[in-house]
Image (cartoon, rainbow over all chains, first blue to last red; front, side, top):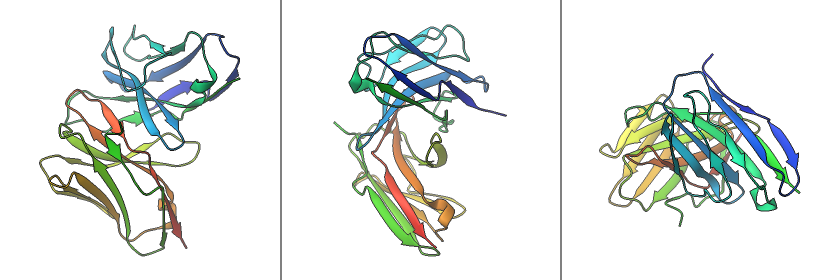
Length: 114
Length: 111
């Protein structure tokens, strides 16, 4: 089954404690991205990756890092989480090119930073 | 600055009637526009898209209309069904594959 898998689904952590949210896709997609969803702000892109070893900032990259060492995985790293990073996070993947406009999303990771 | 705007946070429609969800955008460089549907505790799922060179795209009960001069698009659902109750996100896709979303509209279809 084609899917994007995020882990963990729920996470409560304390300010300043480094954490990683993993994302893996089994569709051999080149393009992957991370979004956060906040009330009244919709989905905002954090980082994206066009292919292995190619990453770039989205709309709201501050406080986040990503890496793309292999095609299927695109982890999101919070080196020093803060309460304003409490949010619902989604990873997505798609094929490159405008003819492939459908992105597949993971089920989300609800992060709470206290 | 929000490049894609959905000014109606919520919409309620009777089952069987038409649902019309609206979306405005400011970025003239969007090449595609997409609609995603999101149920609680799930990720968004793709619904329908339209190229910026088209003015209409239809897929079953779902039709998207694009008015480039007004920088406005709308999603029509006919007939609306209770299973359509969800949050709908409008998105604009750039040539660099970056997808900008609106804030979403919560549709409730009343049986």
